[in-house]
Image 1 (cartoon, rainbow, N blue to C red):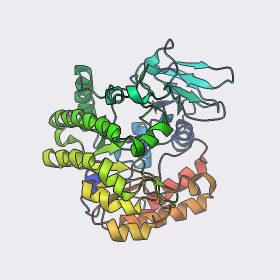
Image 2 (image 1 turned 90 degrees about the vertical axis):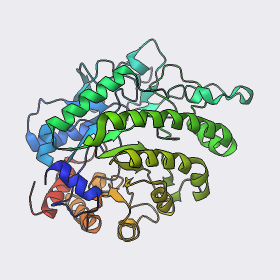
Image 3 (image 1 turned 90 degrees about the horizontal axis):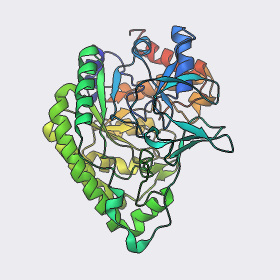
Length: 422
């Protein structure tokens, strides 16, 4: 099988020739640029190569075609035209991370330092605008800066929380047309689209770090509170978001056609380490109706498989995700309560593709020995891989200081699981 056929088999619950692998196709299945840099040098040499930062919010590094080929990665990414900070990835320039890693960033990756030495990044590359992200000097990625005045209950307007949701313009459509042609004709990899504007309540998006002057409820705590005490307000936001999102989906389905294999719909987290973050009833009432509408349109008009990302112990919510129409669950956080790998595969493996779960990025991958990483990866492939319905990835993004020896052990285990075939 080629890469695209391998992913297609897994998504349709057929046994592929080997376990399919994704790293880098989405903003939740990638690697920090520092980790990519060290891994690339270990695998390919070339110590002067600078890795591109393709997702600046989490500082995720590009897995370029040569590295993807060397590691046996089966996917490529089709992200939105602009990044989380509102600029395009183009006209690359050198940049040095706090840890000394030399990378490439987009020309509009515009930063300043505050009095503490923390790195501040400005939306749309405009240094005259207030910064929207902060990377502490001891950190490796950005946190959103909350830019919201105190809430005035009498002046709350859902339109303020929906100003970022608009129809795809000519520049966006030209971008998608060009990129889908390049990816489909230039590779045989499975293409994973990140659909803009349909991640209802994704807390990483609420502060709108790509906007210069966001309005509405943009504070993370205030938004979570609002899902309980201002539910009508949140529902009004979702209604407008869904209306625009469905129209954009119709446009992209017509433009991209069957050249896309999977579409990342939402990264809203519904779980914690100890179980669900919200009651099942809240999901049914506030989120599920919009997920149903999005999934129904996609499944009616295309062959795309739909991808939901939710961290934590979401086992009680998985039947609801399936009923809402999702095909793919990520990141499959097996260390959380109720997320035992064998139980998940037995109970839900006929309905969902597990995209992730392959290596614990909280414990084993960053802090274990190479031998422990190897054993865990082999075990997860054995459990999840039977009969298809599994795409290997780590449990969320690989972090900056993950030992290179452990990353090499992970890819060695993947390779050994299929007898060394690439």
